[in-house]
Length: 78
Image (cartoon, rainbow, N blue to C red; front, side, top):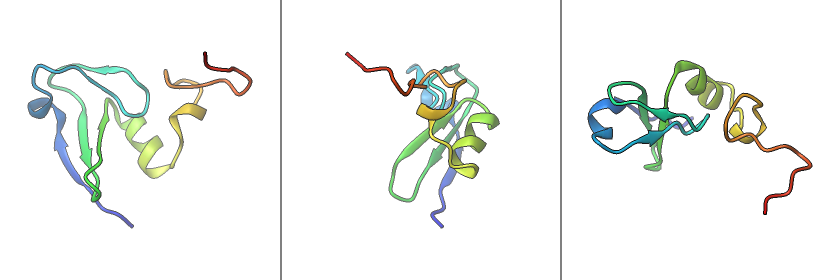
């Protein structure tokens, strides 16, 4: 199992607006978490709900209905 490194996203986000990797919401300064995987991929999470859905439950954001990144099955992108 790959392990990662947890840090607070507050100091590293700085003035840049960061979006949650799972749901797509904007993470305000001073909140959220940043997860760095072993392969140097950086994941940002706005809440423990998003964090658990992606890392523990292995859910995909495009198949989760409440996510802003949700895509309907029959919908074609233009």
